Length: 387
Image (cartoon, rainbow, N blue to C red; front, side, top):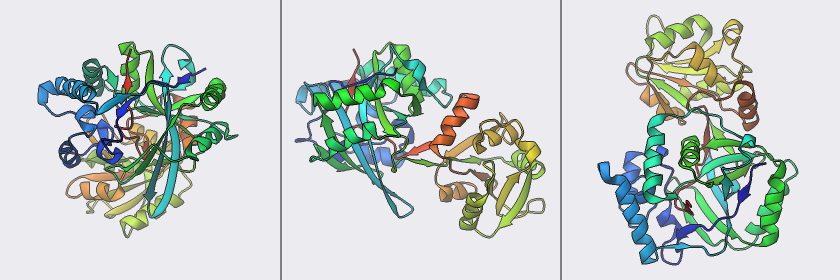
C-alpha cells in the first residue's frame, strides 16, 4: 500500500512573512515577467524554487535556505504534521474550492500502487537533481490523486478545516490559499488507515518524483486530492506548431473539416462533439484551407488503434512528427494568438480524471503535456527536508 506520513515541515514563520508574500507557482509554469516580479520580494519561495544566478543558481538557493533558517525566517515544526490546503479560485466566472493535504509519500514501499501518467525528460530532471542536491530539501510537492467514494478521507479533512486556518494568502495567479496543520493523533491515524487500500495516480510532478527516487530520498513531499473533490479541475493543453504545413495536410486527409465563425464558436463545437478525438484548428486561411477557425472530426479509420481514448494520443500519432516543435498552453485565446502568422494552434477537448486513469491502464504513459491540473500547488507553503 502507499504510505503517506506526517513530516517535520520547514516553513516560513507566518508571524514574520505573510503567506501571500511567500507563494510562487511551480518552477515549470512561471512566466519570465512573473519571475522578475516575484524575485523583487525578499522572502518569496521563487528564490528557492527557481533561483536566479546563472551557473551558480543552485548555490544561491542553498545560501538563501541557510540564511533564512539562521535568521528565523524559516522554522521547523517540531511535531510531525500533515498540512491541509484549501484553494479557492474561478474559471470562466464560476467559483471553485479544492481541498487536499501535503504529506510525505514513502518511496521505499508501496510504490506499485502509485501510477505515473506522463513521460519525463532529462533536462528538467537534471535541473531538479542539482537543486535538491544543493538545498537538501524538496521545495515544491508532487501532486497525486486518490479515490475516495465514501468520503472517508475528506471527512477527516473537513474536521480539520472547521477551525480557523493557520495561514491564508493570495497566490500570484489569483488563487486564495488557506493552510491548516493536522497534528491530532486521531486525524493522522484515520488518514493513514484510509490509504491502506488506495491506488494513487500522479497528476503532476513526474520529474520531481523520479529525481527524489533516484536521489535516494525516503519520502517525497506530496499533495493528495480526492478524485471526487468538486474543485478538481483538468484544463485542456493546446498545441501550437510554428511550421504546421505537414500537420495541416495530414488533418485534411484524416478528418472531416468544418469551418466556424469564431474562436468561441469553435470551442462550443468541440464540446458538442461525441468523439473524444475531435479538436479545433486555428490557422491562416487560404486556397487550400477552409477558414481561420476549423472543427476537425477524425474519421473512424484514423481513430483505430488509439487505445487511450484521448485526443492527445490521436494528435501525437496521426498529426505530429518528430520534426514538429510544439508549444503548449491551456488558454485557447493565447493559443489562437500564438497561431498568428504562419503557425497553427490545435485545440484539444478537456478530459475527466476517470478518463485519464482509464487511459493510463490501457497504454501506460501518455504523450507529453496530456493534462493540466488546475490550480497548481504553490511552492512556499511548506518545505520537506531530505534525510
